[in-house]
Amino acid sequence: MRILDSSNIDPYHHRPPNWRTRTIDPREFNVPTHPPLTNPRLEADEEFIVLAAKRRPAILLSSQTEPWRYRGGQVREECFLVAPMYSFDETDPPEVKLRIRALAYRELFYLPRHEPLRIRESYVRFDRVQVVPKGWLERRNVCLHPDALYLLTAWFQYYLTGVEQTFIIEYRAELMEAADKVLGTDD
Image 1 (cartoon, rainbow, N blue to C red):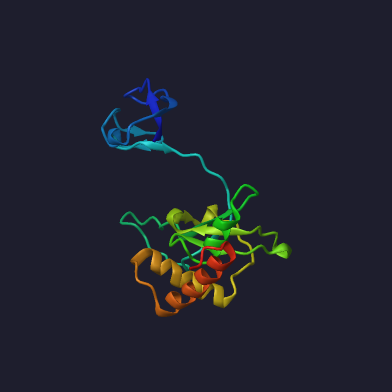
Image 2 (image 1 turned 30 degrees about the horizontal axis):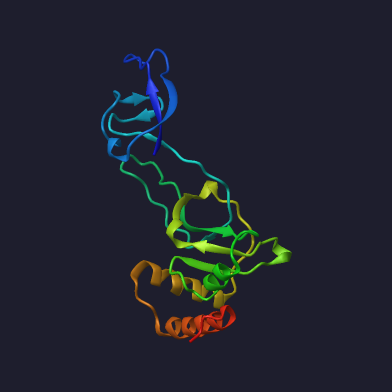
């Protein structure tokens, strides 16, 4: 884990602290290593985590929420649950793509290429679902076909709960049988 670490902290806040990134053992997280900071606000048992990130397309999994206020009257920032999309590349084995299409992996959902929208052949990773502030999202007027959305929603529910709906069990069995024939692994 990488954190943004402060040093040379002026307890009277006349000069800003120095900042550097450093790697810590996750067990060190929340161990007070500095006094509370006021600018930027950071409690003694908090750290700024540094993550490598990349803008990528995502599927919106939640709808718009009702606005509400914190105790101090501040309006809560509107956030959405999103599932990031990862595109395939030339080095991905064809059998992996085929198995993802056949719903072989509970945490992955296949998305076909769509040239007019410049969407590459991709997959959604449910194990990377995250909450994202509305301001970080770039709106595109694109939506999944209702059948694809229904399947994605049911597959995500299966990922979350481990409970497969009957139509998913049947559909997945058909897809896996077809994939096994193509791969030559059928009995």
